[in-house]
Length: 409
Image (cartoon, rainbow, N blue to C red; front, top):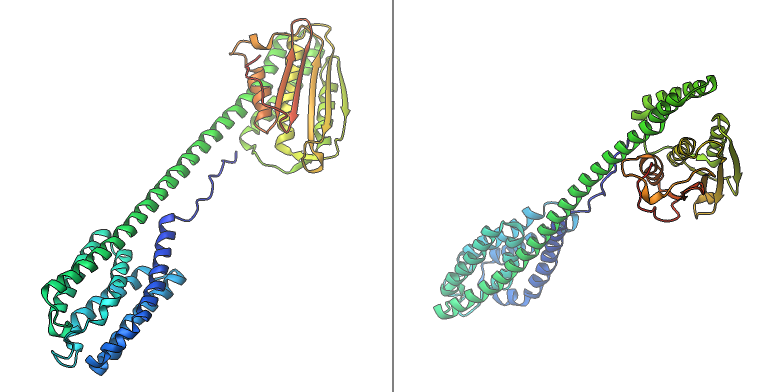
């Protein structure tokens, strides 16, 4: 039996979010750095020549590498760590970059303009705790640099104000990124749980279908054969029982090998099987085939409809009473299927009949062998009967309407 396959899981939202954040960081970080070029040009005269070239190359190179990595989807975390690390190194080494201790007095270090880019890169690449440490430590380092002559010689009040400004903006970026990641992680967890529950439900459904199939085989073939054997009273009856027993053995031997799949077969196959059923049984059974029967249907559908038809005929033979006339009608119908491959099988008799609603729940004929057998392949069953007015069982595929809730004999 082929198990139902759970739906293919989509790409994790957390991974998609991290990739998107990295691309935004690389793109806007590079743009912010470009926008700060006038400030860099204004302070270039205060830097040693090698540093005036080395600092922009380090900043632009690391951000550009991060942008490329985010676009190709490889090395994103490492490239973001490089951006954050290069910024801290240049921030610490800035005093060695100026021409003289007093050359940068009154000037804002150029790194001020890309500090938020570095903090955002740390928030993307590092765990939340370490990203928070980075967000606090970098403003403190920058405040210390601002009070040095090489950092502009700002007063401690101005240095603290700059540090608080950077801290607030960095904390805001960290909080937004962390919140988005937490939401994405919850979505991932919910999706994983949903897929696991779907797989569990599909497994239970497959097991229930297998149980129904085995119950159907046992009830349709074995129990019917035993009942016929118990009631046989003539050589012809015993011959019929032998044929039923042979079919039951074959069905039991192949039960484990059956699958839900199978190639499409012509509807004519079902017609011939029902015709042979009517001819084989020692009962007065009329057979008729009407409508368009030139299409095809899956083999499992034809098998399900046929076995339901067999049980309907067996029920009629067992319960309709002596002298009842029986008929099997196979009709094609246009059900919107390819080739108009809809079908309807009607098993009718003019026997005793019964009240469908009053059938005891422990009787399995209608519920297992007819209704669930047809329903398992997408069909429907409509049972019409009344005491003294005979019984009519209509098996349709695809389903024409929902089955009535009933359990039966």
